[in-house]
Length: 179
Image (tube, rainbow, N blue to C red; front, side):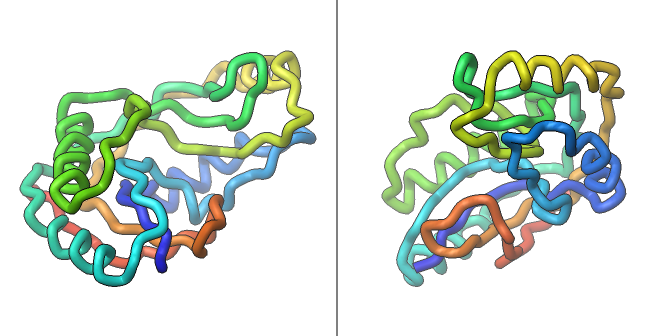
């Protein structure tokens, strides 16, 4: 049973730039730059048949290529931080692409996603001993993050090792977006 999700790849040159932000926080498990991505829809562990059905249905997505803008650093978890990320501007084309993925997953019979879509690129997962103050200081030291924009010509269906998160991720299928 593969663990799958849809997402957008971060171009290699952009990933190299983002990886320079990593380091300097002891509780962090840094994500390998080749695994940087923007998740559109987490699907989870599914059977081969469901995975194949999803892969086929994603070809129906007819959206234009989109610009993605990275806007700054943040963390999820509040007083108990659990990850560091680079925020992505929630543009209308990006939100429409994500909504289309959600509609497809519901047609396949998956439960609706309960979390609000917050586009981001995860830089690190944080251990239980991560302190909010340390995370805030880490972000403040990198506060001059310059916004970056890149064009996304396609989205992908990723897989990961069953029941294990954090990569490595494999591209199972690539779906072009119209120019």
